[in-house]
Length: 516
Image 1 (cartoon, rainbow, N blue to C red):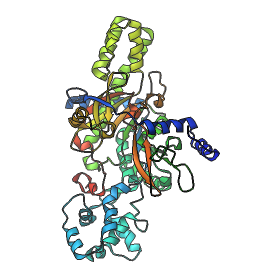
Image 2: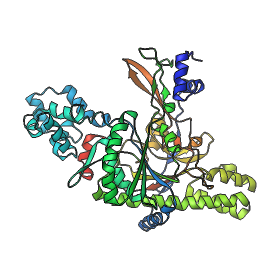
Image 3: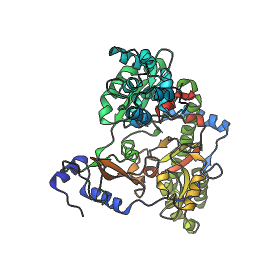
Image 4: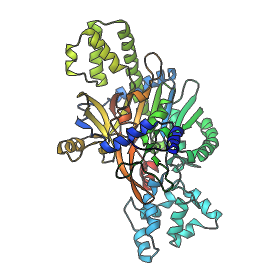
């Protein structure tokens, strides 16, 4: 047991956590998180559904007909600053000396990930006019700055507070795309996209963003400014809400010896619990259907048609499957005959990819009834999957669970023991990638909201090494939102076209054709 003083305990209470929770987190630092056990990759032959074009169109049409009967919201994780997006430019500021040799190399650098490539194409960015005007206020001419090879000034005005301050803003507030007479931030693009599939029968589009406390004010200012424009041009009304990551989901940091880490003021240090903490924010929503998409995976209007089609298609599939699930659950409440049990079992296996224990065949009808109700009465998610093009991140796999059953899961590389050759081989043979393109059903067959916290695999998560005040510390992340936090959900994986996945991980990604 660790010794905590009254100041520590008061800080726990303010965060909404108990000493027991903190002790459990410290225990996990000591024991570590077990690696997941990969059984095999999910593929179009086993675990990923490839819809014929006719089915895509039929499901999209079904969604358009039926969606008005549901409360729908778009949930966009958008917390945190975009500093990692500008890593190459921050490095440039630290290392650039302004020599002629450097400038020659800079202006001829063909590496599309480099600072030089960014500078060469500065006029192609949607924030170019804002940058020009901001520098003009300080008596600087952007064109002249470039002609004079004053690249330090140029990059400083992109990143730092004297200019656009993009190095400290969230991605949602960055200008992503140009249009004829204006440009759009990522927040605005999600507003435009949401109008296509998150609009109810009254013409209300509901979008919920998760943001950081320090970004609330500029976020609200932007929404207040642009909401009238999109309401008018798209013929909808917006109900835009936001939340911050709850302090209760932060995790305590420890030193290398797994003792609570204290800063120079002897105060305990806590760190955000990662995107898995957002299951709490998701759980607070009171809606039937939730579309989830990352803030940076957004494209301009001109190539959004396929995205709209497949968003509606996976939404239609959710409605179709959820209707079947709810119908069967109501029947199982009042019936327990062999005909119904066999019909529901076939549906669960063939359409929901639910695996039953080996002894299921020997269960009595009543035991099968209980098992089916337990397996079906839970949240459901339809997850778009794109063919793997070498992008980092999670993928779809069949996992062997602690109970020795297998289920479909989205897995990150950090969860896999890559020192085990068989596990590494399974991970490397995955054919698809998770682009965080989900639609979720979070209401049960009685019309009640599920408590999503009951469907988390608490044994997942990971530990990383960070630093503070020049000292190393260990940080702990909670089960990822679409990994362990949804591990006990019904999961359906659907192949979607690669064009629906166009994330902006670095500033130079905005120079790709899809974002121009």
